[in-house]
Length: 135
Image 1: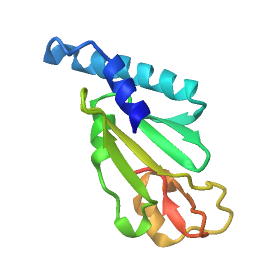
Image 2: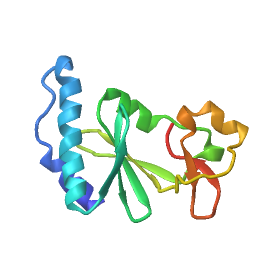
Image 3: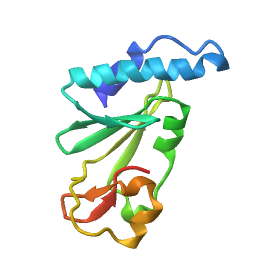
């Protein structure tokens, strides 16, 4: 947590207007991503709204835009969600979603419940349970 507080303190440019908010999020996302990479987190992918980085068995999802902020706060069906935690950077309020890394190499036919989630983005947790890794 100490590292995150220092990272948050280094983000010193406040939003000037609501029109600047999207660009402000984009700029902060790049700053945060760069810092995590300096801490040896590895880029594993991105979607329209978030960037995902991995370190050991943990993934952090960093919002790229206001929709990414909403995505980090959204809750999937808890039965199928991996262990996760949202940490808001205190100064900026940017929510970072930390979650257990899931092995996406699913070979067998997927159960019916996976059809209701974006592209059936599921994987196995350390206990071998099928969970969502994106929602």
